[in-house]
Image (cartoon, rainbow, N blue to C red; front, side):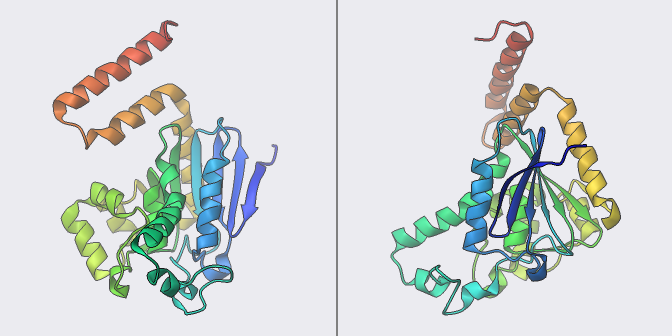
Length: 263
């Protein structure tokens, strides 16, 4: 069996590609895969460098934790080497601060592209930015030791790395507010029960469960999956009648393609 192709390996992020499946791995287990601006830029680069042949992207973290969230060094006056500290950022103009946060968010936005299906394989801690990174993916498979928590509010901040929209979509407004405002941990059983996780398995079975799910996703024709994903992603923003129209248009494209009549 050939080894996966290494596409990117920098700043705590490794991207490998094995035919139609890409794997993005957080590679700093000694710090529980804590996140930094450099890591976010590397994650954004991974999305940009993803080959067009990839259909499924698996996101995982090395070690005992998926990601324990933002590296606390960000909150020190010194910040990270070569980076403005968060204190320095706060002194900037509204436009400057908005631009910087938007750049950080770009690491979290590409996982829901219609041409791929992303799966977060989550074990141990997934806190704050780690929780939001798992939420950035389409699907989540969790180990039985998983601990989700949104701690930003407890620190006087808000979740700003694109996690609020999928969290509300998955668990509803009231549950999302309670999880964020209290900062409490959500374990494997609860995460599966309330819809945060698609599947919870023993830690020793996590990789196998993700491989099985990836294989099942690859079994369907790619264009049908792309059209279906686009329909489902847009459903919440459409009325019932608008969704009916969208379904008809998507099906017409599929039928013409299958009949060899596509433009």
